[in-house]
Image (cartoon, rainbow, N blue to C red; front, top):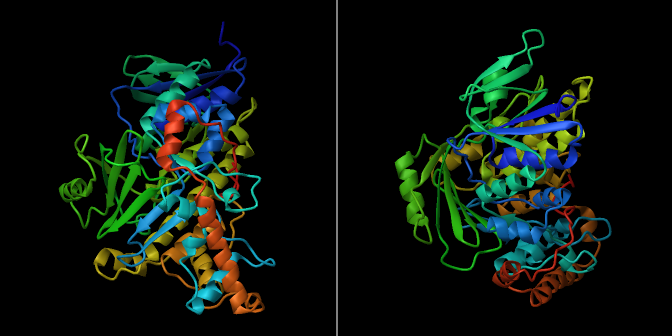
Length: 516
């Protein structure tokens, strides 16, 4: 038979997670030895609110051989240089978390220590003034990084705002062209192997029974296989990340899109604005204890910068993760394994890294061994690292104007985050994770952007004369300003993509985080 000697992989659920998984497996698993099938139901909708990404998505597309310009046209994508946070320090504060560095180390000492010396003397500009990515974002400009440049043009990365539904369709076409089989149907029952406890088969509403060796659960919040069938428990992080609802709606585009995401803090959570070429994505994240669904929807509609393109949709969630992402012969990818609110645009990244690690630790013919244990350990670290970074935004607020933010600033932090914060608060040192997403530049953006100034800085920065330090930092700032003059506007860059005139850019991801 055609499939007699092939290993069966069955993906349950479509959407972004399912079709990213199908596309990657079809690219890297030999079709002579594997059969890949995906089950989804047109009757079941997807969450589809994660339209902002981080630079790692470029590596995912690159490894699939996807042309970036074709991808951008297919998903109505715009460029993204970072995230602007309004009201996360005090009520009127604003800063940008960029995809890039801020200044250079000098004589082996990190740039921010020199900035801290000037800040203590009242002579420093805003920390973001020394970042090319921040300045380009706020100026509404974009061009590809120049990896050979000695100046600021080589010191940043970029990502995209995209229509996640269109991205899933784009990858669906990619996967189907590479022999992935799509099966329409709704899962109504699951069978377990009575001796091993593994999943043996699923049953569809059509009566069809589907067996497989490996099951990938991409069923979203329902977690049909890992949660409901294998009963892998869910660890809630609500005590650290208290928001449990979001309401989302798109609106008409009324102006040229910014090359950055916006996150506006409000009295019970925060609101996002994500610009695409055809529309603007909007959402309001909130704690249901302090704001009703109707109040959230009304608040969101009142804040739109263009006419709404539909009715607001309420999404209920509980931040946290499954104790294991891989149990028996089932690997959960996406929302079925955990959920972290989209404050730092990490949803698609967590899908991507799960797929990458599945390929790395894919089980052999002899069955599952130590690779499952390593996979779970590494995925737990990924979730924990992102969790800590999100918690930092809430805890570091200086808004004493209402109970929600006072409770956030008074929360007891995870031990892993407490150690990092105390180290920075004491001496300005940013501990770098050996594994995990966010690099020191990201932590610095939030620490300093939300007003955490260390008690002291590296004593070595006192060796140069203060005037020399001031002159050097001013040269860094002026270098960014000078380079900005040569950049096209974001709108001009997008027009090149639309017209097919943009040159395919080189891939450079190392500045933002660990390369996948």
